[in-house]
Each structure stands twice: as C-alpha cells, then as structure tokens.
Amino acid sequence: MMENKEQIIKLAEENVLHTYNRYPLVLDHGEGVYLYDTEGKQYLDFAAGIAVQALGYHYPGYDEALKAQIDKLIHTSNLYYNEPAAEAAEKLAHVSGMSRVFFTNSGTEAIEGALKAARKYAYGKGHRDKYEIIAMHQSFHGRSMGALSVTGNDHYQEPFRPLIGGVRFADYNDLESVKAQFSEHTCAVILETVQGEGGVYPATEGFLKGVKALCEEHDALLILDEIQCGMGRTGYPFAWKEYGVAPNIMTCAKALGCGVPVGAFVLDEKTALASLAPGDHGTTYGGNPFVCAAVSKVLDIFEQDKIVEHARQVGAYLEEKLDALAENYDFIAERRGRGLLQGLEIQGRPANDLVLKSLEEGLIVITAGGNVLRLVPPLVITEAHVDEMTEKLERAFSR
Ligand SMILES: *Cc1c(COP(=O)(O)O)cnc(C)c1O
Image (tube, rainbow, N blue to C red):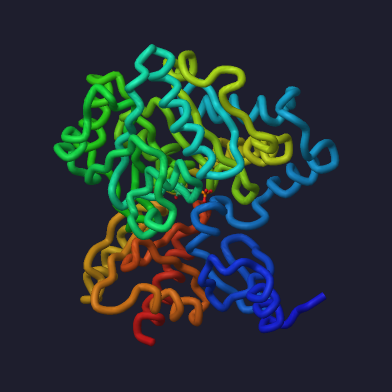
C-alpha cells in the first residue's frame, strides 16, 4: 500500500502510456459534491469526472443497488436476456420518448453504432451511394476511428489519416453551410445539441430546426450527440427537448451510469425498424447486468428526486452568478451554455492557468476548446455550492 503522492505519480508516469498531461492531483475518495486527495485536501468538484458524476459521490441508494447486483451477477453474454438491461432500456426509451436502445461501453462506441445505423438505414432502402455524413467543425465525438472521422478538429485527426470516407464538414450554427454540403448522397447529419469540448456552444433554435428540416427533405437521419449535454444537464431530460427537435438517433454516455462505463445509442421507431438487424452489430460487455443496474437506478433516482428540475433551477442561479463574474472581470469575454453546462471564454490569459490556480483554492474546474473555462458540476449541487465555487474562483482569479 502506497500513500505517498509523489510515489503514486512516479509509478503512473513510469507504467501508464503517456497520453494525458495530467494535473498534479492524486484523488482518493469522494463524498457528496466534494473530492479528497491522498493528503486529505478537499476539493469542490465542478468537473464531475467530465460530466459523469451527475449524482455526485455516494448518492443514497446508488452504491447499494450496485453492490446488490455484484452479489447476483456482474456479467453475462448478450446471447441471453438479463433483467437489469431490459429494465434500463425500457426506462431510457421512456424518458427520451424514443423507441429502441443499444447499450455500449463508452461514448465513442455509441457514436460508432449511430454511424453504422445511419449507413445501414440508407443501404436497406437500396441507396448504395447514400453514405455521406455531414459533421460540424469544432465538434467532439470521441477517439475511435469512426468517431474521430466526424470530429471536426484537425489536430486530433491529422496523425491518423486516412479516416473513414464520406464525411463532409459544415459550420455549427450556420444553416447555409450545412445546406451547401447536402446532396442525394447524404445519409445523416451528426452534431452535439450543445458543443462541449469545442468550447461550450449551444445550438441556436433556428439552426437545429433548419437542420432537421433539411434532413427530412433529403430522407437523411439526424444524429444528436447528447453524451455531454444530455441526462438532465441543461435542465431538460435531454438538451434537444428544450428545442422541440427530436433526433432519429441519440447518443448517450457520461452521466448515463453516473460512474460505471456505459453508453447507449437510442433510435426512433422509423430508424429502429429499418437499420441494424441481427448480425449487424454487437459487443461483449455492452449492457451487462452490472452497468445496467446502475443505469436503471440512476433513472429511478432522476425521476423520484426530480434531479432534472433541480438542475434547471440551480442552473439558472449558476448562469446569474457567472454573468456577474463576466461583467466584473475584463478577461472574461463571454459566458456561454445551458443549465449546468457552462463555459467562460477567457481572453488575455491562459484558461489552463486558472484551472491550476483553482485547484490550489480547492476547486476542480476544467477547460474546453483551449480558452474556455468549463463548469460541469454534479447536477445535485445547491445554490450554496455555487456561491462557494464563485468565491473560490474569484480567489483563483486574484492569485
Ligand atoms: C466525451 C464525449 C464523447 C466521447 O465519449 P467517451 O466515453 O470518452 O468515448 C463523445 N461525444 C461527446 C459530446 C462527448 O462529450
């Protein structure tokens, strides 16, 4: 047993492949909306493991549900049925108002499945040359080859080309640029309802409605990536519900299991009936009883404890506080976001430096798109936690 911080960092640096530039922080345990490092220092968590820990840490009933499932069955194969997966799928279909669910192990795998479903839908209708996908500049959809192919970021794509073909890029919130990429070859448009990693940009209502209309006109599918902005984060069960624009395929992950690795792509009835069929897609782990017991419990807690309504209320308070900060500090160019997915665009000083100074003050925040300070706290934070965050952030500003 090793409890020394430097020893742990050294061990990791010597043995784990160096793909992350990590902050000098060794986290040990969590409680509520606080994290504690190996030296016992407390941090108010406004990153939530990158929008994963929507219920914070040790939410009443969550651990117990997982422990009970461990005692019954952790894993079985998708060759057989299991009760947690059936229940979790029913609940997810119900809250989304969509039709069929495929469980994955991560967000990037949910994107892979969504892309395959879109291509199969066009193929199944006999359109062998209808395979193009329109994606957005500054988007983020994941790191596997398919998801990377629709991620509009040259820096991420460059070393790994050639990527999958038939992807065209348009500008987010610019309907004309999407229109310019459309043709009879377009099988789908993929976009985040609120862009996360790219710098926290919500879609405008006119853009989302316009893209949906273009999709309908061309019999193309609309794929909305709700991996970061979904699961109540914007104050709606899924961000698209605020716009009243329903996708044909939605991707989820991050907060879906509140800590266990699980994602999903969810299809509407029309797409479910005419895309992926037996033999087209599969996964060994995806939707196993353990992770689905978590999804099922998370969705129960969301409903019983009105988590989404709470997120909407406290999100409005957070917006108010951040707007005040943006007014008081010249280096904050803009506040953007929805509910509890918020970004402060920083000018004239590095956003990452503010993250480091915040850590010293006992506050965990992250960046997005290089110059944006991103706040994605647990949805269960209270107004008092928002006040505490603001005080810590202001102390970090003046460091
Ligand atoms: C995080 C994220 C992904 C990728 O999810 P992973 O679980 O890291 O593979 C995809 N899309 C969006 C919008 C994300 O925020």
